[in-house]
Image 1 (spheres, rainbow, N blue to C red):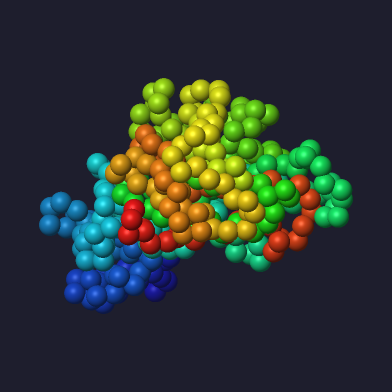
Image 2: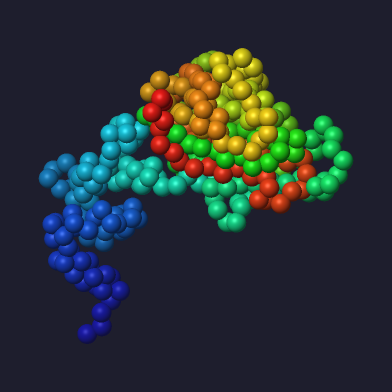
Length: 320
């Protein structure tokens, strides 16, 4: 008897269904990746059908896993949206526990250092490292986003380790909306606040998860590592705002150092730490979803290990 492909699939599904009792499934589920959860829901009707009248078996497993694994801090940082499934929330918890990575690089030259997505570098291809220095910056400003790890609530802390010289390597770090597709525009330069490429702002489709869209809405907030300024931007307006007097404002005399940023979405604030020392609250009025981001610009062509920005997820400071 010839066995059809669909028949083979049904036999495979029935074998999986028989082998995985509910108890076994709950036991192995914490070790499954999100895609494996979805595949199980698709391969077996029992896993994907309604379970207990409210949700599927896999949905109920995801709910129990999240409930048993989440810390209080993670629970506060990852509230479930209305209509959001537990299966959809599970990968967000996995991302919250994963190392931060710049998954979207906008502009060029902008590259990873040694293949690590947590570390970016840029260079000026037109000027050698031993050219006479002047104040004319000819390099492109480019931007990297961690928009694969969205922050929706609670407190989040990240450190940006800056390597380079203030006279040769400019960096600003902060938060912005997790805009998709910016890296598909083919632009050489991408500065969040640059006027020569601000056309990208006008065609952004706002998400309901970004909060209000009024005059006071903050869609971007960056810390200028060199001068200490706070740069903020509302996508609905043409001009960025530079705050030169926020409490505790302080830049880096030399770029080499660590910038810590504490995003508190319960209070709507962004606080800055310089080499572990808290400077103060730089930005207020933050609400909705954000992701970490960094903009860099190089004056000369230096090796990647001599001018770069590295991001790491950190524990919320006790004073936060």
